[in-house]
Length: 384
Image (tube, rainbow, N blue to C red; front, side):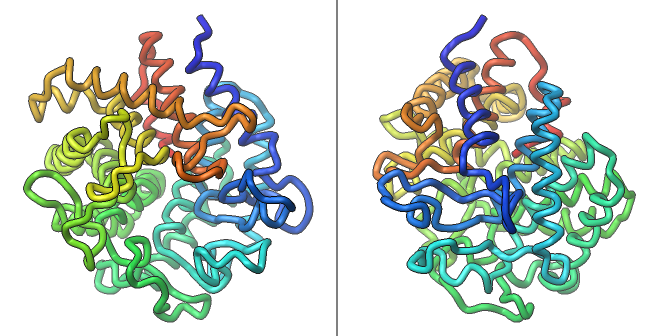
């Protein structure tokens, strides 16, 4: 039976595959724009930058959708993205992206930035594509990326840099931002690393995955929150907090490591306690404006790990269900009817690519759960 959640998920699939947010021709074919500014008057203003982290997410998103639909359009789109990644690699890594609008400075000189986090998301995307195609060339690309990531960003198995320039030297940019700091959110890199270990059997990837999970747990407060900005220890940003939860629960679930799983679950419980009166998840525990990415992130995690929250943390089922119901309504409230995409927050008029991907997966998991379909053992493999 088709419902509103189903229809919104279909609209988001169509937007990601067929709108101009995905580049389908020219030198940047296969890339994805970070967002569409609906207030802009020209194309450069509407689509200011190509965002390679999100291009990596697209492989995970379309792999997920391909396993659902067997629609070859997703395969063709992913082939374009793989070619884009291959063409744009610098020392087997990707930079942040490319500005299409020279006046876009919100993220700095992104052509000169290489983030460890972004490349971890590209790694996971390449491996998800490999899972559905068994393309050995792409597996080799993933291995080269992982090896470069370890070589340039780690020392003695420990993460040393969040951000380098294209010459692979430390880059002093945006030191006040959580995304430029080494943090608990880097646990999400564990998704790609543990997948690569499972495919290749190379213990190095498992060791680095474990190191990142240890880093995250060392930055977890007693109440469950994860520190993610060392300049503002009293301010917890929910987006990277939930990245930490995603990485720890995924790795804990795959490894059957109860300790890591419980650390992730405690983070989820803390996030529930910080939901707003609007029913969503705020930017931080200080800035209480709901964000679509955080809200859909928490909804996904509750659908996937509700049972574990009951068993290990003794969280009442009715509390979990109430939270999920509120989050679902809030996710759908970010839907832009005129664009058929998800906006970043109420204060902006941006159709956000990653918010749309996260929300699409949350809505799809919700529909499967309501139709008594398994949402974990197969679908956790293609987590966006």
